[in-house]
Length: 526
Image 1: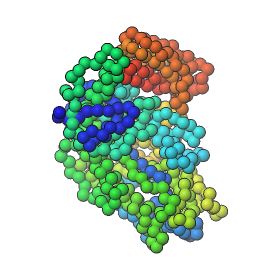
Image 2: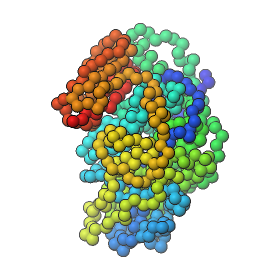
Image 3: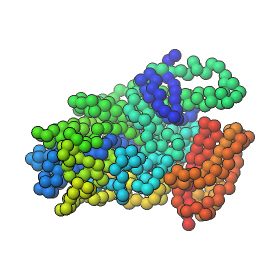
Image 4: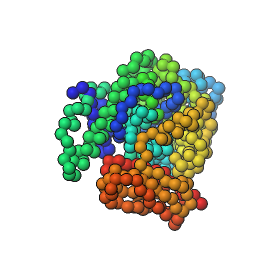
C-alpha cells in the first residue's frame, strides 16, 4: 500500500490521521492552474453564542452598563481603544484584532441578527448556517447553495481538469448544514493533511457481482476513488514550502486547536489548493456561568476565548502576508446569537439576540458599520439588543463583492432579496470566462429550459440506466412532486414540469441515478 482512499455520504471516516467526508468523481489533475484568479473565504464559527457587549464594548454607554451587567463588565480603563473611533473599544484580550484594526484590515458590523430570533443553540445555528428565516426549515446551506450555483454539475464528474480540488473544506469538524445542498455535501472534512495510506490497486482486485450487493460495492469503490484524488491534491499542497507566522498562540487547548486548523488553511492556500471556502470553529462561548473571574472581569473563560480568536486571526493574517497571498483571502466570524444586556448572578450572561460580526483581510473596508447598541432605560433581564443589520445582508455582501455575483443570482442563493452592505472592496472580481468554466465543469445530467419560467419548464436528464428518480422540492426542502421513480434504460430524456399552481420562488429539481445525484435550481416567476 502506498497512500489512501475512502468515504462518503453518511459520515466521516478517519484514515491515516485524515478524516474525509465528501464526494467527487474520477479524474486526477495536478495543481495546474494559476491560483491568482481565485478568492478564498474563511469562515470562523464561534459556537455557543458570543457576548458582543464584552467583545465590542460601547464605552459611550458605560454608566448604564455598569449597573446592568455589574457581574461581568470590563473595567473601563482596561478597554482597548480603537484608533479613529470614539466611544467604542475591544475587550482587553483582543490585542491581535486591535492590531488588525490599526492596520486597516478589520471591519465590524454591529447589531447583526434577524426578525424573531431563536434562542436555541441548535435551531439558531441552523438558521445562521442555512440563511433561513425563523419560521423556515431549509435543507441547504447558504454556501452550499452558492457552490451549487458556481459548480452546478457537482458532484458528477468531479474532480476534473478544470476543477481538480475540493470546492470547500471543513477543518477539524464534520461538514455542517452551511456547506450542504439538498442532501449533497459540497465540501469535504479533514483533521490534518497527513495521507499515508492509499488503497488504490489493493481493493479493486475482485470484480463486483451482478446483483444488488455488487451495485453497492461499485458505489463504495467509486467514492473511494473520488476521495483518494482529493487526498492526493491536499497532500501535494501540504508538502509545499511556505513561510509561516510565529505568532500563533499556544496558551490553551482552544487556542492550540484553532491555531492548528488555521495553519492547515494557510498551508493549503499557499500550496496552491484552489478550494474556495474553508470552515473552522471554536467552542465554549455559552457563558451562562463563570464568564469572568469574580475578582478580575478582564480575565476568565470569555477572555481566554476572545484571546484565542483574536491572536489566531492576527497570526493567520500575518501568515497570509508572509506568503504574499493576503489579497486573495478574506475571513468572517459569526456566532449563533449574542447574549442579554444584563448579567446574571453566576458571573455570566444568558442567550440574547444581536451580535457584532467581524470581517478581516486586506480587502475589507475597514471601520465599524452601524452604531453602538442602544441600551434602553427600562432594560430588564429579558431585554435584548436591537437588530441593526440582518445577517443575510452580510452574506449578500460576501456574495456580491467577494464572489462577484449579480443581484439576481444573490437573490437565488439567499432565496429572497437582502441589501448588501459596503464592507468589502469589490474591485478585481473574477472574469466571466472563469465562471463559465466552473459552471461547465463536471458532467451535466440535468438541465431545465426555460429557466426562469412562469408556469412550465422542461427538464432534460441523462440516466446511466437502472433505478432513476426525478423530484422537485421547494426552497424549504419540502417535496413538491415526484416526477417519476422507475427503472430506465440508459439515455437522455425529457420531462414536462408544470408548477402553474405553485407560488413563485425558488425550487430544486433533483435527479438520482444510483450514486449519481444532481440538483438544479429552478426559478418560478410571474
